[in-house]
Figure 1 (tube, rainbow, N blue to C red):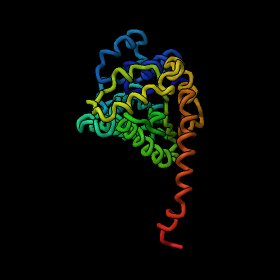
Figure 2: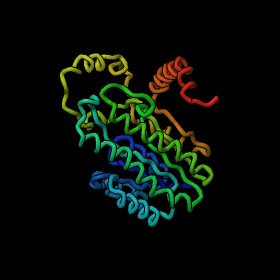
Figure 3: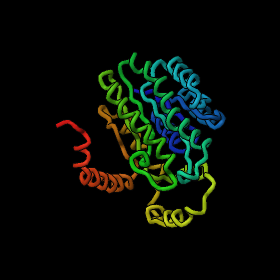
Figure 4: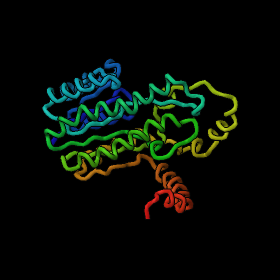
Length: 275
């Protein structure tokens, strides 16, 4: 039975690849982008199976309008994929206020507005699946990516709580956490002005084999199969890494975190103040 999929940021990258995979197998797909002109060829190829919507996800009212239009046209929404987002490179000190606010507005609040708009529809249906495209950088962070990570850590906290709130309503929530992929992310990400005090740190970071190895970045074309399996699963996971690099790094970072918490456990327990 065909599904109705709502995908933000579908004019390129992951969103475009996933939209085409759904359409190729016969699903109905609502595709959104800031510029709907980038979606025209999908309409020409797939006809009425695709509904293009021009959408700025930072506009809450427009997010509600887009969800309502999708529901009106297709009668239901089975899966919502919050994929639209933006990147920002710069150390914490280097990032300008405007750039920091813009990335939080897009990556966090844009995800929140679409989620809030979709929930009444999914509740009324008694089923649905919300997929939040977070990042492996929502699980751990690297230098020069602190503000980007902050936006994804926020999505992680929001969605973990959401999953518990809607579980009894028949709604699934999944945090999709890709490691680095050879998409346009790096080229399209905003770049803060640099401060020379951080030049040596930056040079060492970019020389790290984690960033320079031939397999450092995954192939985006390898991801649609995983997405199809995810949306078809009767019991989808709360979290799913995409790529082979994320899990080993997550294990490394969490081993260190747990060791630190354990080493300071006596101080923590004393601070509780109640026997």
